[in-house]
Length: 205
Image 1 (cartoon, rainbow, N blue to C red):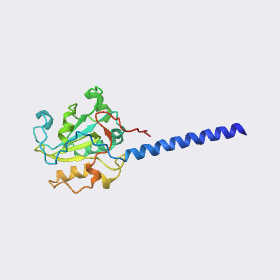
Image 2: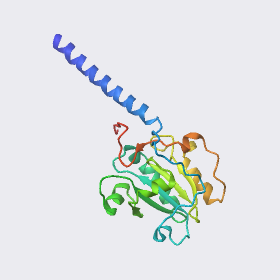
Image 3: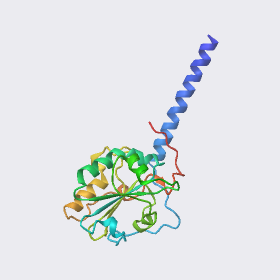
């Protein structure tokens, strides 16, 4: 009887600890990423300087996907990003911008995201676009003017269509519309600090 009680108590403690960890991770995920002390905000409409081979000769707008392979948030939105590429690759040039202290090959990144699209390792683009967390999206029009910079979705796995901010912005730009009115959550950074995920603890499920 004593042994049964001890085992039961141990299992309950283990389940409580796991539940507390999941709750903590979920709570941390919903907090905005701390703004760096030296952060300089970049207004929408700012000209972003890309190398000519990245712009496709200016024939298409550019979608920059700021990505860190070690960031759980970057992995959460993998399927959503894949769907954006597959749906809009004829009209948009998608580029992955790797934000990591670790060295990766282009092929390794393409394997991780499951897409054969251009990959660059120029972290200076983050400062140009005003990005300080991953994953983040930056959308440039044909003139390389910053049309949108912000989050993909308020949902961890990008499943909430009402808050698919990057997709809403992308579709608005393709219709030559002004940036739709989005709430503050769209433009405030959520996710992992750059270039590595230091400030948060996550448990993938």
